[in-house]
Image (cartoon, rainbow, N blue to C red; front, top):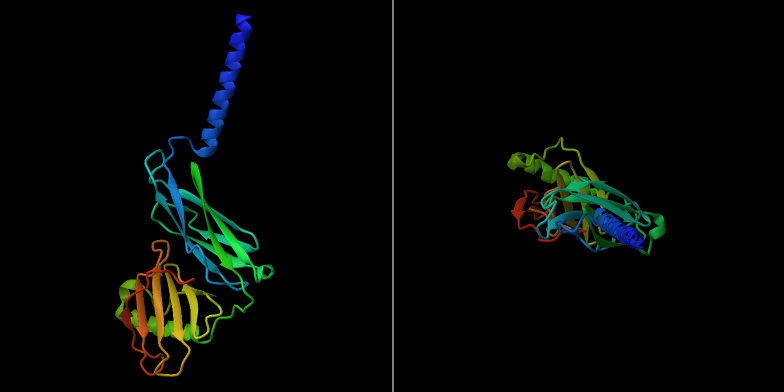
Amino acid sequence: MKRKLAIGLAAVVGATLAVVVFYQLQSGGADSAPFSVVVVPTYVRESAPGQRCVLLVTVKDEGEGRGAGKPVRISADAFGATVQIEHEEILPGEVAEVSVVPSDTMVDKNITVTVTGKRGLVEKATATIPVVEWGNEEPELAPQIRDMFISWLEANHPELNITGQTEWSGTLVTPRFLVVTHYLYFSEEWEMHVYWHVMIEPYNWARIELRQRFKELSPSLAFEMSSSTSAPEPYAIEPPEELWR
């Protein structure tokens, strides 16, 4: 009888330990350092099918423990869109980019993007992207205004390493903002937000904002031309605190 009781207790203890070990493997262990996932922005003003909506993701350590200060692996999913991640593993304070491209089937609907961070523990954050019916063409003025600023930056701010040979890819942003038109360009190092007032001179100002990719969550530099035709000499202005999306 005692032998059977001992065997039964051993089985219970073994099963309990197995559950604890399984939980720790799934959760990263009770001593894993807590962290949080931050998505910028959590709400995009609006988007169009085919537009590349670029969300920024960073992580923050929220306490001590195993893994503190170590990289966090980022993944993301979104129904009704294709998703691509640049810099899938980031240290606390670094920035990953999650590009979400809505499909035609999501017009007049919202896309929910779920971003997951894993470092032993698993944390999630979400963002919402409304989709409207609109084209995704590059406005004719966008590359012209961009290149006017680039010529000036190359001559006056060589430390930025932005030249006429820098390669850029572009995407629409906030498609139905018509009085002020917005467009985003990306090089390997920089995000350039180009926008201009659709008016006749002297009210046709133009501006750019620059954000260092994978390092910054908002622009650190901004420049303006008071008129893109009659006064095309740029000057520095205060960059905004928030990212334009």
